[in-house]
Structures are given as C-alpha cells and as structure tokens.
Image (tube, rainbow, N blue to C red; front, side):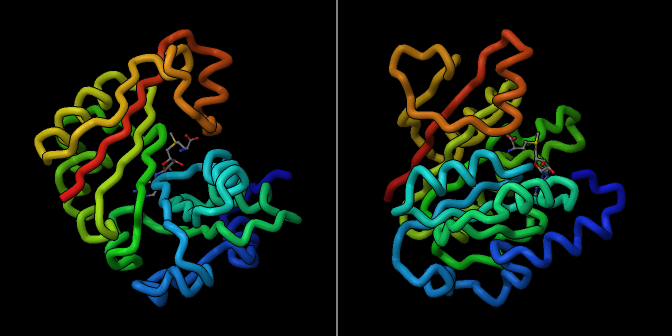
Length: 213
Ligand SMILES: C[S@@+](CC[C@H](N)C(=O)[O-])C[C@H]1O[C@@H](n2cnc3c(N)ncnc32)[C@H](O)[C@@H]1O
C-alpha cells in the first residue's frame, strides 16, 4: 500500500490499537497501561518497526515501546501490526527529545538502532548519545542505566563510546563486526540493518553499555 499524503498516514496511525496518542498521560503509569510489572524497553527512532515488533514477539516477558518521529515511517509499522496480537508492545509518534514528558523513572533499557549520525559539528546535540540525551535518559531510567546501540557509522560509534565513557557507563559488550562476531551475540535485525546487510560489506558496530550504582 502507498501513502502519498501524510494526512492518510496520520489517520491510519491514529486508528492503530498500538498507538499511544497521549503519552504524557501515562507518565509513571506505563506498567498500568501494560497491566503488569514487567521491564519496559524503549527504542528511539524505530523507523518501520521491524526490530521492536520482532523483539516483542521474541521476548513476551518484556514490554516494548517504539518511538518514531515521522508519520511516513510509523505508518509502515502500523501496517505490519495489522491483525497481530502483541499486548507487550506500544508505539509513540513523537520526537525523542520529549521523552522526559512521557516517562518517569520507569524504563529499563534504551535501544538506539542505526540512529542518524548527524556528522556536522553544529548538529552534534541531535545525536542520541550526546551528553544532553544521556542526561535525558537519566530522568527515565528506572534504577540502572542500560543502552544498546547498533550502527554502521564508525564515526558515530566512536563518538558514542567516548560520550558514554565520559558519562561513566561501562561496556558489557563491544563488537566491531556484529554479524561476524565469534561470540554469536543475540541479534534481531532492524529494517535498515537487513537492507544494509544485503548491499554493504562494511561491518555493523554494536555496544551494550551499563551504569549501575
Ligand atoms: C536511519 S533510520 C533507522 C530506523 C530503524 N531504527 C532501523 O534501524 O531500521 C533513523 C530513524 O530515526 C528517526 N528519528 C530521527 N530523529 C528522531 C527523533 N528526534 N525522534 C524520533 N525519531 C527520530 C527517523 O525518522 C528514522 O526513522
């Protein structure tokens, strides 16, 4: 199905039972929305939702929330979810910079998958591993901090390693070639990653970073 105008996409998104159209109303109440106390994992910039949907299918004991800014991407996720029953998945159509309006200290893990690298210096603050974002994450992590990042962009990866280290995260896993890593790191591919895997020979970088008081 094609969506030529954003208005169509917006209508379709708003009808989805997975969409939480008023995420502010659930600040500190996401467990009651999911009707259980299972951990809550959040993906920022989920795109068309391949990763978060398959994570929700694979790990029913975890609640997942996929957040995406653009209707044109979100509508593809909504399409994919038609006819499926995943009580452990919710979607938010919003800007990641507003997450502290949507969540109190209730998130266990944040996934940053193939996020925009924002290569220009003047855009550095938009990188999801910029210190301003790490401060934002502090406001929504429940107890411990846990960030999982995948990217094909070496510069963003190096930047993220540095930024997270400066912020006292330690690294449980770092892989410079996720798809060929001998440790066989469990991995559910994103849309971007699947396409990339078919066409590109460069490696996928991966990190699992934690901060525990
Ligand atoms: C390169 S795509 C990757 C999509 C998906 N994670 C994947 O791996 O297939 C980056 C996604 O992040 C979204 N995005 C960028 N900035 C965002 C923001 N500030 N808030 C929410 N989503 C954002 C884009 O719209 C896009 O869908």
